[in-house]
Image (cartoon, rainbow, N blue to C red; front, side, top):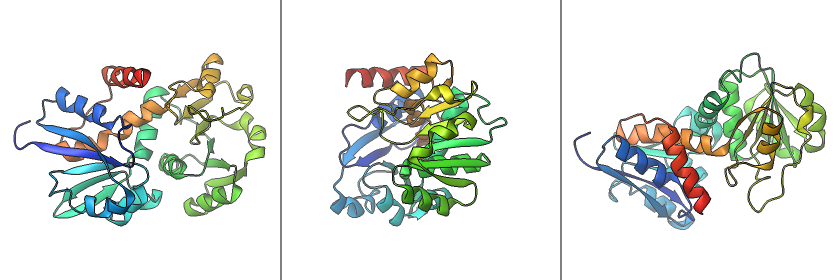
Length: 279
């Protein structure tokens, strides 16, 4: 692609751990695009000033990660998806204005489609664990895919009740201690909590109670294979891991900034897996 060089970034506090530069620089090389993608560590107290001067800093847009997603929503013109999820993770400049969206829902769904084709065929009940920002994105994606019944379990039931109220009658809050009794009718189980993450307690569930055609999605990607995914694979269940979602959620931001829709390829996945292994 000819024309001027374009540069985007990921903004976080901290930001050095982000794999986004590896992902986007790979796509820039693959498509022969003159541009760059950088990591910017920006403290919360300076975030507003930073994003309001993206153009002056030479950026056409940015990804936003913790702890800035809610602030990014408030400081931009959000689309319907970002408003519904209540957070923005992707910013771009157009018509002299700062626009935002949230690509987590589409990244989650695209990863499921790639890892477990047909996962939604005849699906009646999904069980989502957690009620934070990632859970909001997952629930939004499942509602868009018209999953009729979404159970939402959280240790603090009131948080699940609040999220269910925000999304309507398809979402049912569930006490954490009632998870086990729902597993026999759950054909999609999604972990959005930090359980199973490196340094955190494991997510201990009797997954032998799940149907033989159930699909397991775990948003954790450090470690790449959590105990939950290992147990699911040992049972022969289909799985979608957190790295796949990370890669797929990056696609639309790249297309907004660089006018090319990239592909999530085995080569890209291998690149990020190698980086994770060396971390």
